[in-house]
Image 1: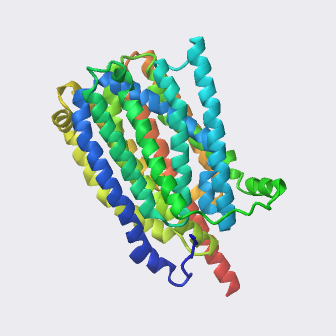
Image 2: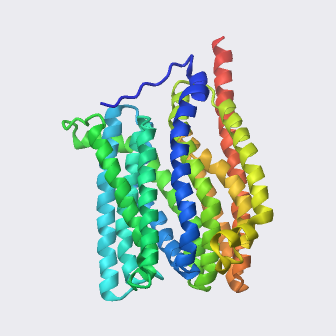
Image 3: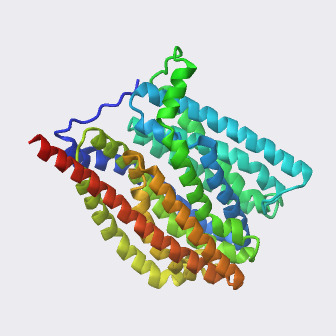
Length: 446
């Protein structure tokens, strides 16, 4: 049976840096390096098997997934880590799985009605519309299991599931790419279908790992009133975190959701490749740091221990590694992408350079995105996302009015970079304010 054993207050800081931080980050990072290394090599093949238009359809498909996945869980999976007891964590785990299943079933019903009636507000073929609910379901269960295992520091299982998902998806994408000329249905479905099947494989691994090491049992004697009280206790997650993530995801995917109706899919495909290989490392690192720092920082908050120093040290180390890489990418993106992915991807370098300032601030902001959950300041975080959405809409509207796709992307990335920079400053202000309050308490007690 899994159990959480928080480190003592006396030795917490030293164990964070010298023990579990290195051990846990090593597990997750090594697994991601292997999985993403395979994915990178596969893209060198896939970019020659599929056209930029195929990649455009795939990214439009996935943009809807990233928005709908937030509705399917209500962000209650984040509360699994923050739950005060293992029993509450077990309740939240099961409730969130049920919520994900119900919402996914409703989405499947809606997709069937849209396909049968021939009415669709999504610029995708019917076959891809029907895949959306399935992908939402398996992405949702993946997130719930991931945060459950995060609570109990089972990072090896998280890493293994990510490797299984990546290897399965990559292998099927290459297979479908070679079958493209034989089975015409794979021309548009190949990339999305392989991704769905990869998620299924990762879910199977998670389920088997859970059966071997189940969460502590949730008492069945709890009344509906008790469950309702518990859900209300963590209502900030669906009330603030879910709308915030919904707005953030919709905002980030606006280029695919909106510009797909105004510009050629080839241009969207070029931008999608640039976005994939600039944002993929950001998402990998940010997810790793969230999994590691969220439970440990939350424990420090519960124990009334300072937080700011460790956050500052982390950001210094992160940017020391990231900035030189971004500078190389800025000057050599075009020849690198053309050499790796083929001549049909000429023009990708421009979009990479547009993205890099946003990438710099985004990797800092996303790595600390758990702080509003720790400090219960999700409302302000949500306001940041609303402002960013408004500015992005204006940026894309200017580009559409000028009928200039390149201008649309440039303005979109610039306003995104500004908002992310301000968000990082706000996160740091929160840690400063919290540590300052601890100092005042110590002075009063002395």
